[in-house]
Length: 434
Image (cartoon, rainbow, N blue to C red):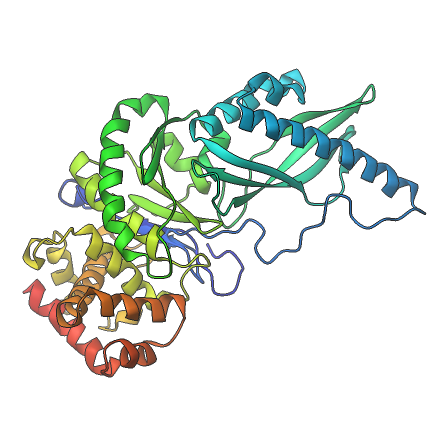
């Protein structure tokens, strides 16, 4: 699922730790120059794409353009009024710009955004309205909404949403607000689901009303995971808030486009503005497993560059550092994936021994996936044991953020050639697996 932008990935997936024994499932995704598997599902809704200002260039000689520009001005005014109503907690005002038929969907969206404590909601039309085919009385315009959650001064995340309008009786009214369907990120939870939300000092956690009872425990676990993940912010301050969405079975298939590999238990999606939004698969995830998974995914959110990581060749490092954080400092011998690592390292295990070829395929068996994550973890653990966390983080930043080769990064961070350290890492994984 590449997003078509050079050097970017799709969301990443993480495994369901507690299901390793019960279901043999493993997961995690992120974004990169590939589709995202950490799911960093990338995406600047408008990254790299030019946007047009509200009015566009003047063209006094074209009556159709003048009429569209005037209509666009009126739509922009309605959008601004709606934004002010949303931020001011005025549901009636939020709905007032729309036709009655649009009210149920808009009411749900309003409630979800208010529950998420939206602090910035800035509509930016991306051109002039155009007539809707087969509906001559309707106009459509794509709007770039910039939003912040909880924190007023955040760098806003952008989302592109199609809107449809009807001009009747001299008043322009909203007919529908469509779902965003970007190839990079997909539909946000607040666009399509009713949400209940809990907010802590470092995290905001949301789920559906059916799973409301899980919120208090999830918030405690997310806050604990955030304290760990903060230590992996290798390029500046940690996220202002970690955004976590706990998905039921139906939501798992629809939030951010769905379509994850069967072994996925969680992922982190890049949504722009320096933010990543984490999704956990509630189906089969135990409370104990959520601790590891949250540490893993929030570490992705803290450590990854906004544009994703450069290539599959760095997958082992990206996932390895998240697995290291997820393991919570436990001894290597207690790592749950050692059996899968042993299978992967055995003759005929399907891996050629190169860390840059460790990435599992989307349709790989769960135990092959588990072995890949395990080798990544053991490689990172070896580097930490030899050089300490700070030098490992320097190596990570150089490779993943600055996009230097492992050879160059190794000399800078460790003072040793990568070829030798690579073989040490693989040898350490073999020794740990027994």
